[in-house]
Length: 431
Ligand SMILES: Cc1cc2nc3c(=O)[nH]c(=O)nc-3n(C[C@H](O)[C@H](O)[C@H](O)COP(=O)(O)O)c2cc1C
Image (cartoon, rainbow, N blue to C red; front, side, top):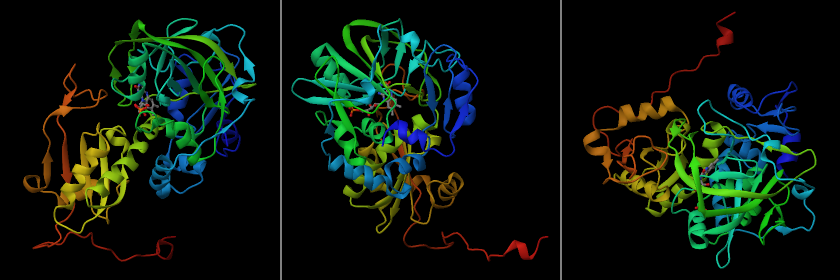
């Protein structure tokens, strides 16, 4: 299944027929619709349609992958541990049309927020290649700075950054309009040299094709492909940009991507992704849940579930549900959790009776089961997420801590279980 066929099958898709501007108007409508998928049939400045909010919830991702929400962690874990080679095709939908001249103004790259530095690609999956280490896929926001130039935000020390530092200049392909298998795989953090397209293929089969300008395999059924060269020799201001935390990121000098070729499907549909909103949050946080789950189990604690929850920007907070067997399991789970998600700042551990998707219930457990002097874990100051506005400016040093919100196994005094009230069928009592 492709992004296109998934879109065609969406029963709750809203369609906007009147012309909408790519500057602030489309993003306003996408934001108002929140978790409802939308297709803009006419963008004022472009011949192409735009779709958004396609994977804003775990349910939407699970539907695409053909599993239940509760099966996402094992499904993603299985794909990471058992990658499979995608089918290579000669002819691909994403290369049906080759634009005669490279002109990024012809593409509906949205301008999202009032103070953004420019039009931004935020859903682009970047395919890069290293001569010895092979392919890498990840996301990098790109700000348009000319008809054929974009500046690319690259977080330091991740695989793409390592590839670029070794090569100084390298060809890349930015692929837009992908299904959840490719998006989730690109968002995983796996060891260098692992081609995430093989993870995507285990999640749901994906076809790949050779890029037009360099020796890399790209998702054949995506909507647009921008091929060109990224160079450390040419830097440019990137930003401001509203990031995952819904706060404005600082302006940094970042490498420039010179676009040399643009190919697309016939009647291609641009995939927009609203920065900081639900879809961005799901794609950032969800792929960390399997790694945290694994590390908690490796720490000797039975992990039942992990929720890298949206209230914590789907990045800085995590809720871990355990089957507590020993008094120190909560603290061990905190240690395991941090090992599974290095950018996490606050971890909360709960018993199996707590619904970790329910904010009120999670806070109830903190209120009734947590004692700061015994259940609080303070870590040494360390380097944190570049996204956290409260981390030390420049160094990004941050304080991290964990909250063991599990009840003691042996109780004295009051009990910790929530009382069960009698049930009534209201139809019998109210007209
Ligand atoms: C929607 C989305 C946008 C992202 N934007 C960026 C970005 O602009 N720059 C960046 O370095 N990482 C960004 N990331 C995170 C990278 O994709 C993440 O570092 C990657 O999954 C790790 O890849 P690696 O294991 O190849 O290093 C983004 C992730 C998502 C899901």
